[in-house]
Amino acid sequence: MKKLLMGTTISIVVSSTLYAASSQNAEIAQLQEDVKTLKLANQKMERESDANAMSGFQLAGYSSFDYANEENGEDSFSGVRFAPIFHYQYGDRFQFEGELDITINNEGETDIELEYAAGTYFVNDYLGVQIGKFLSPIGQFVQNLHPSWINKLPSTPVGFGHDGAAPTSNVGIALRGGLPKVANMRSNYVVFVSNAPTFGVAADGDVVIGAEGKTASVDGAKMWGARYALNPIGNMEIGISAATGDISEELLSGDELLRDYDVLGADFVYHFNAISLRGEYIQQKVGENTLSTLEGGTWRAWYTQASYQFSSINLEPVVRYSDYHNPETNRNQWAFGLNYLFANNIIAKIAYEINTDEDDSAIGSRANNNRFLAQFAFGF
Amino acid sequence: MKNIVKTIIIGLGVFISINTEMIATEADKADTVNGAQVWADTCMRCHNMRQPSDLSSRAWSFSMNHMRVRAGLTGKETRDILAFILASKTESDRN
Image (cartoon, rainbow over all chains, first blue to last red; front, side, top):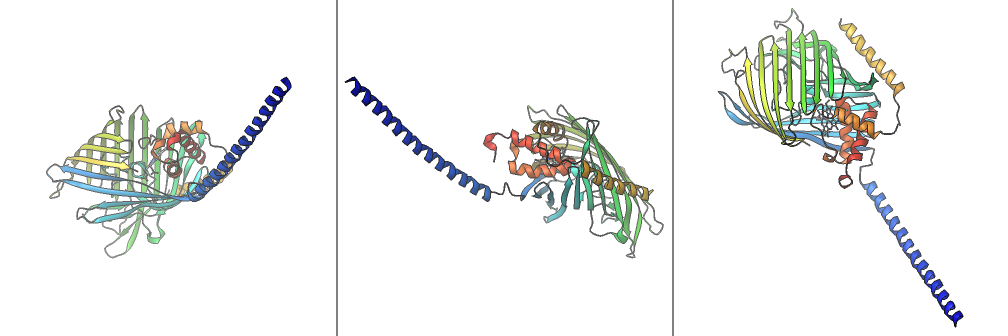
């Protein structure tokens, strides 16, 4: 009887383990099958998505809408801007960046400018060779602060807009990159050569330096320049820049002549505890040429700006003073602004500008008018 | 004067390209600790900080190459910052 019982128990145990083992085998087989299917699906997804491709394409950019109310002038919705930036890259060896600046002018027409279009080949960790149209490496504002979601005020400092004291862009070649640390300090450089700028009388009668990159240079005239910047501590940068070369002028006769051209710049920024301080000085000097009736001279401008972010209430007050001198006039401006940050890249700004211009003799001159400005800006 | 400046600039260019070719170390692994440090020391200088969750992982690889040129970063700093940003993206917004 005992034996029978034992026999039954043993056979039950054996058969149940055998059963369990076989069902486990089936489960394992099923799991293996599942893993295989998942692997295939994953491979298919990876093949189809370009996330892992060596090369690819990406869109960024910014947009802004302006309102201006000018003392003794009119008030209007004064600006609409859409600035898409195209990025293309091939691994981390090559990248292209191109920005279109699309705006509506006061006639209601659409203006499109090629703000920059340049390819950079990264030769090694410390050297990128950039070719094309790039923003002027002289100073900071033109190159790095002009996008409306970055600029903390709705306007540019006097002298830092088009046809001012600060060069705008270059068509040529630049070598640029970050350098190995020296005494635990980081630093970076840009060295460039480009077509020479132009000098002449603008449509409004002002004598201006056309420091916008061009695809021609008279007699092969060039401009050579560099910027070197040091980061003594985190979030601080001190930069110096210089350029030299020729500037070309077209005479009424159609003849072209060259003059000496020299640029100097210095800039600093320090960001600490939600406070941001920055400033910049730039001068462009145009030499004389006795064959021309236009006098040369120095165009120079500087600004300094302070801002503070109250992160708990998303508010940011800003104050900026800017000063611009050219051979025809002296101009300065105080700007007081208040920004509301919906997000770090979505900002509503209001500002009041107090403008002073020595040369307000021209009939209808508005250079002395104070302005109230509002802007909604975002980067994407 | 002009020629001196030109010579210095060309000389500097040549010097930098020759020198950097020798000291550049290519395939060192991305260091997220250094990435976090350089990120905190650099990315607020020109504009408000863009959070890792602002952009997709794919978009970050483009924007970091863009910022390498803009902010004058070295290749290693760029890789380290990208590694830090991707590591700090939460699982849910990783794509």
